[in-house]
Amino acid sequence: MPSTTADLYRQPITQRIDALLQLSRQHAERFCSPDAWLARQRYMAKHPTSIVVMKCMDGRIHIPHATQTPLGIITPFRNLGGIFDLGWPYLGELLTETVLQATQSGRATLLLITYHFSSGHPARGCAGFNCDADAAKAHAYAIAQQAGQLFGHDHQQVYPLVCGFETDSDAMILHGQGGEVLDIRDWIDRPANDLHATLASLCPDMPDDVQRDLLPLLLGNMAHVSELSGVTRELEIEHREWVICIGRGFDFLHLPNTALIIGPYGPDLAAPLSTAASIIEANMRAGRIPKDGFMLLASTPYQDSGVDRARAVLKSRFLSNFAEQVIRDHHPGLADKMRRHTAIVHWPTRRMESLDAPCISR
Image (cartoon, helix red, strand yellow):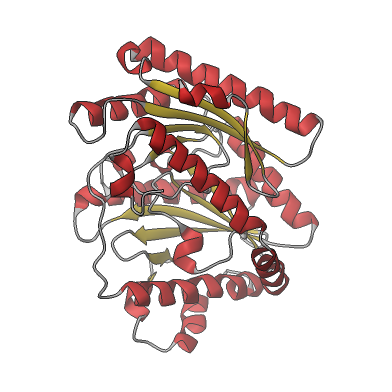
């Protein structure tokens, strides 16, 4: 597999697809390894709070990596532009189910609602908000308000926390109830022991157990940002996505500017699919990616064999067929370059199972 994203996007489409599927297999192998399993069990025993992150599909927003948290601890909700509405029927049901599962086992839920931006160059910000960090932040606050309506405003069972992510440094920026800010970039040379008191002051209504379980993420982010300080990084500015993902189960995919991920949450999937296809088409037209093809990847996670797996198969096939039809209707020229791949993901192991593997090699 190419060592960097820059190496990958220049490859012929068949090699790009093979590399992406190999990345999925490697992710599942790491996730299922004995040391990774033990690390998750130990971490959850010490820090039982359920952590849910709502974030943009941008591959740079990799919260487990940026907080040095074991894979499988943080539950991601990813969507194009990080745009959500808790009134969307499926999203509301899925989020509520996640919260209820934690509550029934005696655990609170920390809901991190993220937006992202670049300090070095506005063009490296969130394309979903036209690189307007203030608009992205305002949307995050709107979701936090909806979370209060859904789960209660006392924040004792579900604590919604607006969190910025500065992509040049991978630093988290927490926003308190009164407008105060905890910016991890300001803590690189400060005593880590003072962080607890600062967090308590920033979020005085946050339950003690949630504060206790948020601290490891902040300390991990401090260590991560410190390690990157002074390191020359390739800061991906130019769009060169060549994959459209529809569905869920893409937590293996954190390559910058590679995939446009559309979660199956909103009532209108055709509009974001058409937008994603427009981006792919523009990338080809501008020569940012080869014109030999793009990948359409549909995926649905499942927990158990039997009915749950069968439901996932039906859902993935529906999403794949639906996405292909939208692209053929709105972008017929691009549709001829489509390499469709339909899959399901066994969520407990993160193993992706292809439903139509021959379709990717035509």
